[in-house]
Image (tube, rainbow, N blue to C red; front, side, top):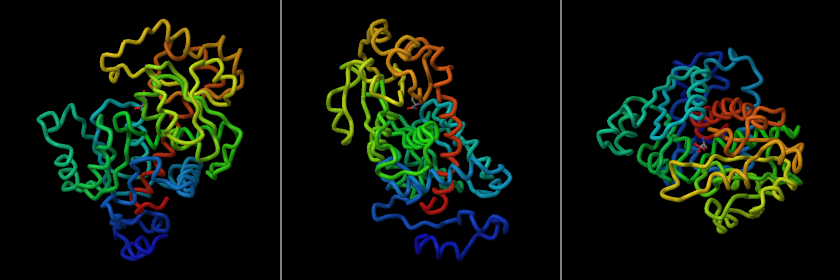
Length: 349
Ligand code: ASP
């Protein structure tokens, strides 16, 4: 525990129930870092040390494994705002259910039904939420870097729930939790945890914040990451994202080397005039039974959703025994509970 957290713990909020005080995050345990960003924020996966990743995984494991009654008051009376400028099913619902299962109050502000429609800026929306008592903001935005702006202007912990084509750090953490459990490994992260494991990420890498956050995280644990896709959706520069990354245009070859196959949707909303021959794409990059059993019959199949069945993945594979897709969704709940506790605990998980 940092000195700041310790001293804040001494002045524990009276409304925190006694039985929960040993573990309950304390209000206002905030020592903004030099750049004004609250330490409970999660803006990019790169900000986390492997030790912090391990702490988050361990907390998620504990929260997922215990009865809900054990943590039902952990964030009692805390106020969280979900600020969503883009559509979402999994991320939004799991953050909201995670918050509620820890006893927190949540409010959802969407660009479709708020003053954002009238032209209010992100900064003013953030300051308004803070004035209303929000102690943490979960932000999804179509502009890369917007979580930094919000964190800077509000001083609140901000959790990046996907910013444009930039990052989706909580997705990378839930994907890691899924990979570790499917491979029978402990929920911990060291620089050798994924030694000997190859993960191929296939599809629209160019527009994918999920691919970026995973490609920034997994090689740090020793994994080899193969990015796979056609030229248009996978520029050669992608290899420079991190060490441990290679590019492979041939999906069959990528599969032959992989223990994990992560499929991505073509993000039509971000194609901006780009013409993709879908029939050809399907032929070359679809994960279907033929391809799977021929090239990677034991690989764990993953997809962050939403899936377009029949395009990047077929139903038999998506619903088959190797698919970890629903497990990813469930793991999202556990990871996001841990991130909320961390956010309101001054950055300690
Ligand atoms: N749900 C993921 C995201 O928000 C992936 C996708 O939309 O295709 O980035």
